[in-house]
Length: 88
Image (cartoon, rainbow, N blue to C red; front, side, top):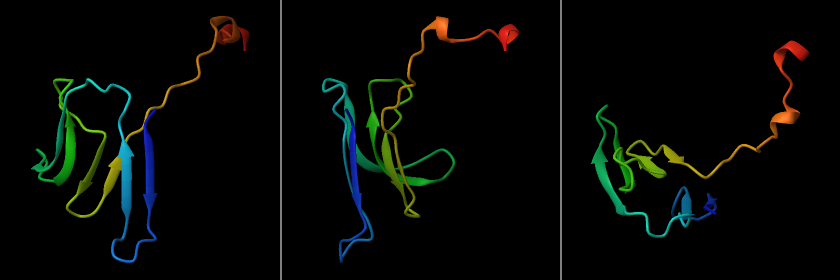
C-alpha cells in the first residue's frame, strides 16, 4: 500500500509532502534528482528503473507544480452482473 501525507501548516515551507512506495521493495529505482524533460520542463523526481520508460510516481516542477500517483484498482465485477446493451 502506498501512503501520501502532505501539510501546508509549516511556518518555513509552503508544503511538505511525505510519500512511500512499498509495493515492490525489490523494484529498482533511482533516487530523486533534477532533470529536464523533452518538453523543456524542469523537474525533481525519482525514476522507476523497473520499466523501460523510466517513469516516476512523484515529482515537482521548477514552477512548484506537484504530481503524485497512488495505486488505484477498479472494483472487479462478475460478468453475470453486467448487462448486455441488448438487455438495457
